[in-house]
Length: 101
Image (cartoon, rainbow, N blue to C red; front, side, top):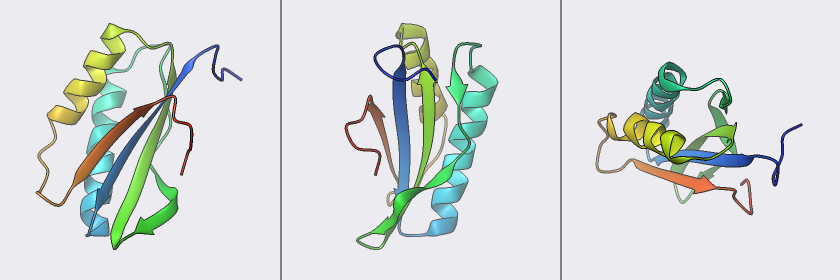
C-alpha cells in the first residue's frame, strides 16, 4: 500500500475565494507535476479537500506518494513556482501531514 514509514506523503493544497481560480491553479500544478514526475512518484488527481470551504476560501488538494529526495523537492518547487497566481491564492505543501483535512 506504500504508507509511511515506507514512503512519504505530500499534500499540496490550493485555496482561494473564487472556486474556479482554485481549480485552475490546482489543475496547472497537477499538469506540471505529471510532466516532471518520476516512476516512483505517484501523483493523485486534484480533489476538493474533505472540508472544502473554510472562511469563504475554497480548498483543493493533490496527494503525492513517493520516497522524498532533493530531486522530488525541486520538481515540486518548480511545478508550483511556474504558476502565476493572484494575491488571493494560497498554495501550501505539507510533507507527511498529521491531518489530511
